[in-house]
Image (cartoon, rainbow, N blue to C red; front, side):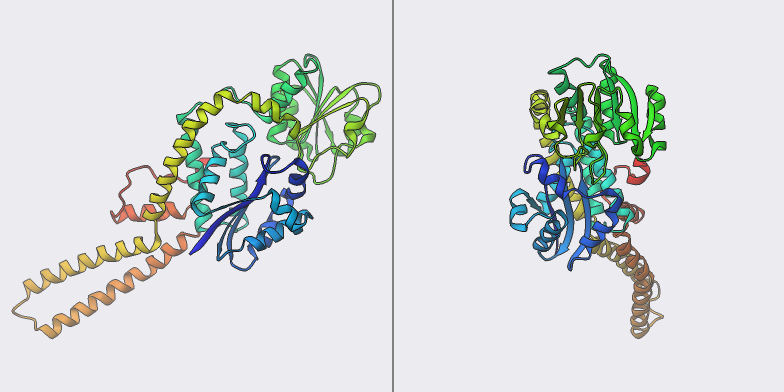
Length: 427
């Protein structure tokens, strides 16, 4: 039987210095996915790598945890014995529940923040695109997104949206006014866009935007009337700036000490993992550096209402886990094939019985036995290709949908709910 395993770390289990070493470069994600999948016994894999979390979800035959942790150790450059201190491991139904909770933002630094669901969907789409997902991951992620929607619909856990970007705003307000401050945003992540929104709404001027690909931030520049800079001109972009918000996917620092103007105080909000700021930049006399770990106390104080809502959300997740178990059982490949064959066999026997009654005095037993064998053989041949196709369906991201539709065609499904396609809903 296959094992479902989640191994990883997050803001609760490890400091930023560990998470930044573990972080995966999104531009090389196909390589990482296939490297892990190439480990003997691993059948499916998905990687989630965000500012606050690095996780590997994999499906394997046998226990491959030691191999996967070894890969993470080699990838991060952290000794295996040291790395294991920061990792958590979830198996089978606990792994599924963990992913449901992550999707519903119950395991985030900011409970209820919407960003993690988008990041999880992106991680899943990469695993599909690079052919490293399969039956189990496809099924888990479809149900995880369903669970997240149920929590969002039935609770107010996202009320008064508090994000890391908003926490950064609150942190700055502790020691200075935002009003009239000129902001430079580096990167095009959701964090950047949220920070621009929150800072603008609080009186700041979104003055300049910088990104590796400038075309990707043209819409943001038009929205705020900001000037666009490529990263090659980043030093120039720092001129006249009061606040810098940076959240790129770069694996090397993009903000260097030499870029910092000496004629003014400057606040740098570095939300990237690994950090976008060169080491030691926060020690400059005129620089106030804020990173993700600095925001924990503010995040904590902003979540009292959400914690109450999270109790209700946890009950919903428990219900969704039970529904998942029933769902998996109902879509079991062997059960579906068995039901199809039993239904076809009942029809064959009924029709054979009618035939015998109709011709009981004109056909001898030997011929009837021949007809019995013939109809069995025909039925077996007719059902062979469809049943093989059902097995193939399971490897498709929408495989469960296909099987459920097939069950409804043959009237062997107990569900009456609409059958929806994940990718058509989430494009």
